[in-house]
Length: 178
Image (cartoon, rainbow, N blue to C red):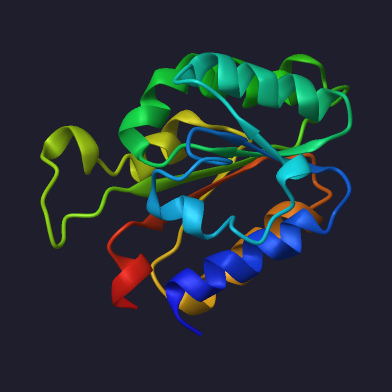
């Protein structure tokens, strides 16, 4: 299957779990390439948010602590940067500072901005995968280079029982190229 088809299949798989909820910008409303992967998801599972990236991650952590599995969507890394405090200082450290007492599971979905056919300039094409791997002690960071990596990564993120969250990085250009 193609990259975009695998993303849609993965989102449909996640949506079948009663614990999941999808939240972010352009989740219930059109606006990004990621929106296309959610078109077969029930509207009751989609929570459209304003551009409040840090609040979005805080909400996701709270939902996870309440037993949900949030799929927290940031269309590009450059937007996710606004949630670094919540990711690095809170979600990533909760299991450490609570001696394993709290182990929230959040699936964070982000992307490296598409450069083709139109280059959106450098504030939209960042790739901070390696930096986040260094900053996060408990969150696993997975970059999806090939279509065959997509479904297994999202399946692992949902089914894992090791108390870890997962940050999954997609390539915007691959939605149409692979």
